[in-house]
Amino acid sequence: MISQEIRNILEFPIFFNVYQRMVGASRAHKIFVEEYVQPSQGVSILDVGCGTGDIVKYIPDFCNYIGIDFNKKYIEKAKRKYGYKHKFFLADASKQYLMNDNIDICFCFGVLHHLDDVSCRNLLTNAYKLLKHGGYYVCIEPCYFPDQDWFKKMILRWDRGVYVRDLKGYESLMIDLFKNITVARRDDMLSIPYSMVALKCIKE
Ligand SMILES: C[S@@+](CC[C@H](N)C(=O)[O-])C[C@H]1O[C@@H](n2cnc3c(N)ncnc32)[C@H](O)[C@@H]1O
Image (cartoon, rainbow, N blue to C red; front, side, top):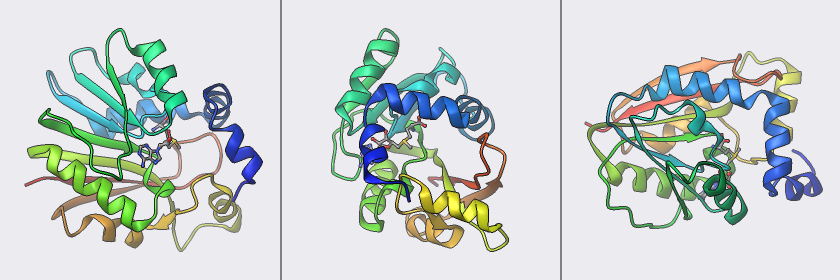
């Protein structure tokens, strides 16, 4: 677990973006969009916990993208950078928020591990309600695996998010809402030794 001082510093967009660059987040965003989000022509996408919005570089212009985050500074930065073509809103995803759109794809990149189980369940229930039938929720999160070496485990323990779970832990948050869940382990997303899991849940 990283110290509170570093946690506070990362609340500022400029330091958050430097950290993201250091760990290779941009490449990870690209892989996540191409292999898991898989946007097609005209889909509406909701990015929950969008941070400073940097993933939109990889969202094709033919999609209707909305980003939400509860960090005001991140949302302001996202609006300054990408507001000319996408919508960003300040909202706490673990509470009720209003969104009229019928969403095809809702995703979280590295958000659930910042939230306790109750908040995650609220976030996922909100996502489920906003999704069209046949739409999907997809996320990628740091994850403990039994065969991980001590170094990878240590890095996960240092993470800014204090709710890093194992695969069962993530699945248990979704299983009551989504029946159809596919899982992929990824140890190659970041430039540091970091195990992640992608979970894709279809709303039937
Ligand atoms: C590790 S950052 C990832 C940011 C972004 N998804 C990315 O990949 O660059 C986690 C983000 O989740 C946001 N977040 C955490 N809990 C949230 C909540 N309850 N509602 C909205 N955003 C939240 C944080 O503010 C932060 O921007």
